[in-house]
Image 1 (cartoon, rainbow, N blue to C red):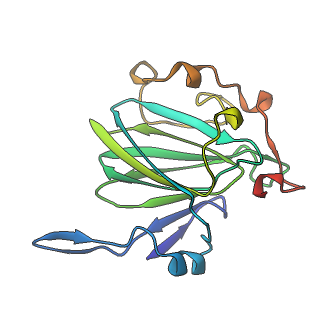
Image 2 (image 1 turned 45 degrees about the vertical axis):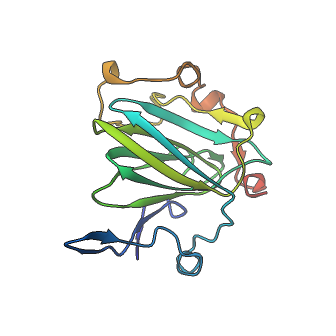
Length: 190
């Protein structure tokens, strides 16, 4: 396993060691000891999987305290552009984002820590997307940030007319109007 550091130190790209031969391939998608050594030490509580078609954009999502979540995301089939946005007010990287293509081919994973909004857009015809969460989903604490907030400057690699969004994701506020985390008091870690 290799860890690729990003422009935001807490967000990490995980490149698993893939063993392939004429039969197919094998890789560890999670190993508590190895990941902890790499700085990803989470007690995963929930695994999720979604299937979407080209142009579907899910995000930018997060949960308010005390139900904040770290996520380890990956693609089983297809490809997405995956994005993590720092929403910890006072953080040196507040409002910045990391965007990485995750695909069945590259088998990359993205670690999205607590205190970040997360989203992805489907780049392939279809995608099967899987992720681990270190806290349970709580609808009453679900929040979001507008995917198209110009202050974030995210290039989603898909044309605006090609996006397929849920009504919820079209109503998310801009970052300046969103409920944010306070970097100084670290409540997003609780």
